[in-house]
Image 1 (cartoon, rainbow, N blue to C red):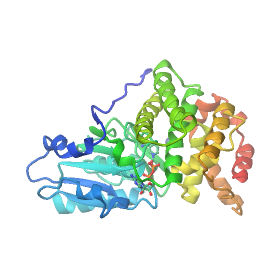
Image 2 (image 1 turned 135 degrees about the vertical axis):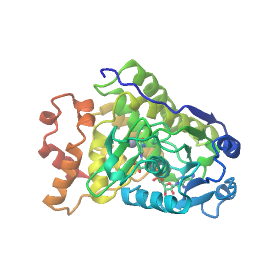
Image 3 (image 1 turned 180 degrees about the horizontal axis):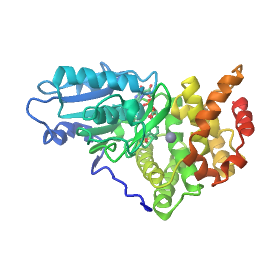
Image 4 (image 1 turned 90 degrees about the vertical axis):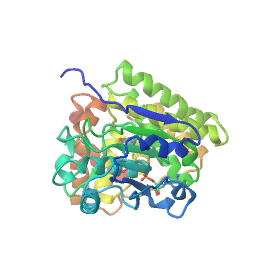
Amino acid sequence: MKFRNFPMVPRVVYGRGSFDQTSEIIEEKRNKERPFIFLVDKVFKEKELSKNIPLQGKDIIIYIDTTDEPKTKGIDEIRDNLKEEFGTVSGIIGIGGGSVMDAAKAVAIMMNNEGSSTQYQGWDLVKNPAVYHVGIPTISGTGAEVSRTCILTGPERKLGINSDFTPFDQVILDPALTKGVEKNQAFFTGMDCYIHCIESLTGTYLNAFSKSYGEKALDLCQKVYVQKSEWDDESDEDLMMASWHGGMSIAYSQVGIAHAVSYGLSYLLGTHHGVGNCIVFDRLEKYYPEGVKEFKYMVEKNKIEIPQGICKGLSDEQFDIMINVSYGMVPLWENALGKDWQKIMTKEKLRALYEEM
Ligand code: NAD
Ligand code: ZN
């Protein structure tokens, strides 16, 4: 098909305090004896949020450790345990950042699809619809709440399960949940959104659909990170909507160089998505001059330390692994640099870029 036909999140609730409505929202999807499974970031264990999760009957909470971003093996294990204990479930509800939301999407898909999640990493490989799944973000920026993918690290690759069955059936956007994120982390995830905007808006894949969302997201990022002097409740609200729009923007375009290079760091070194993107974007003046200038200003204004020297002492073999992972992200490079991207970003240039980090 020449024009891609995208699924979108069919239902969304927005509002400060809307999390309290979760029970009411999911109830109509409850299937008698089948429980709802809440995947919740471990950071909320024993916290107010966990106490407010409306468990009923056999519902359970599974706390997700986000020290590492989601792995195929962990997803398969959760699925196997749920199948063994319950057979099937009413739904999966992910409460957390991109890591937990992606885990929830992946588990929901795997409840109805055989084998290992590694088999579905790629584009349109999922055969059966996922079980009902709900996303509730607690940190803003990734756009995972709207996207058609869930990114998993497997033994062979870090790649999303991109499918029409991946997007959430329901999203609950409650900006109050994003309070309390550590300052650097909040910035890195927020910058994921900013970088989505810059990469989408300057890319060769851009069209009016992507542009309209990308421009709105960029405006909101600039409002909270450049124009305002203090972070307040309105900033949480604005960034939550920026994340949504940024995600919508890349749905119909693509991300670019920062993401392509950051995937290499993440695959080899386990560098998390947000901070990895910042480490790379900081070095991309040549490719995104205006965006990087503004980024550096935001880093300074918010007194953020971008990790340095993470590629120091790596072997040739290790550089090659990162280069090959990054080179594999063809649509990202093509979006950024056009069809002849390999002539512009040669493997030597890419190596030099990694060496700077
Ligand atoms: P994250 O989910 O990894 O969380 C980062 C940290 O913030 C964790 O330590 C977590 O415990 C903490 N945290 C989250 N909410 C908090 C809160 N309210 N209070 C205190 N601490 C809180 O971070 P992220 O940047 O949102 O997500 C990164 C992940 O998202 C990666 O796995 C990446 O691959 C994925 N991603 C997915 C998409 C997509 O479209 N599916 C897009 C971009 C990134
Ligand atoms: Zn991203």
